[in-house]
Amino acid sequence: MGRMKDITIDLVSFELGELDDAETLDLFATLIKSGMAWSLQGTYGRTARRLIDAGLITEDGEVVYSLDFEELAA
Image (spheres, helix red, strand yellow):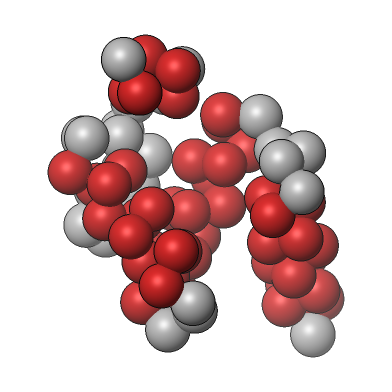
């Protein structure tokens, strides 16, 4: 139960915009590794796919490159 509680706290923090870029990448890496990214609401799967397509996280959920998300939006 401990790890699930941590993920839940991270998801709420993400929803509230309280995670920095590195924390967000770590969260999505965990969601991708566990498969949860694809079973949560669509926003999570779409964000996971964008991070994978941008080369920031691998298909297996490994963080490849830490980049400021503002650069992605540009």
